[in-house]
Length: 271
Ligand code: DGL
Image: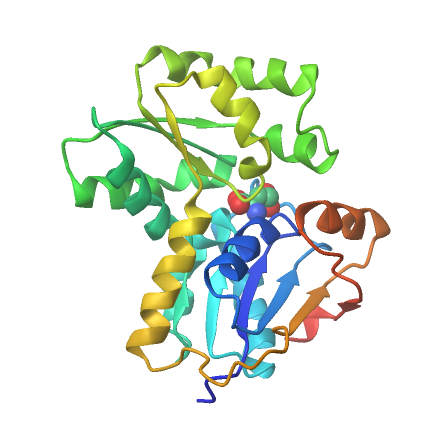
């Protein structure tokens, strides 16, 4: 495998760009291909079978682009599809759940951890399963927060309505005296400041993206796949979607620290 081949990263939509940001921060020398399944988002209220089917098609598309590794940025797809899809590909593939669980385990001091995510992620039990393998004594509290995704996509990062919805979802979990809150959805890092304000200074909010980048680095190192032929030129980033709605492009540009420029549409049903 060519070391300068791109890393493939995908999400149900453009929220996974929050994870891509962390990859760029941690590995600025790596070329990256991003795919957002904007025609079929959201995944968070779909069945396991559908999520596995969608994930399989996206992995096939990324394989056709000769990626050297794949990151499932979507928590929902990581929770439901990673184990099955990993058996179907030779390419190293990681999700965000395992790195997120390790980051939360490292952050907690009192062992009380909250997990928030889509209905599907919360229902899957994937985060708890990793956390209880790390330490069976952890006390886990969880809450699905489905309205956070549309609020974030409306750009309401700092807004009274967002504060109200945060209070509505997180009041109970706050009462449990947790000291760590896992932001188990691609969109939540974008309202991290508002969530932290509500939870108070004793609660650490963990964004799995950072540790995902770290885990990916370790896997690339182990497989001798780190890009060493990096020159002064900027790394190459390519963006693909399954539906090119202008609104999604605007949102994507809000998330990234640079204008993402041209986004190409592909027919994901062909894969
Ligand atoms: N990307 C999804 C996740 O991280 C959130 C949006 C959706 O429901 O598809 O779980």
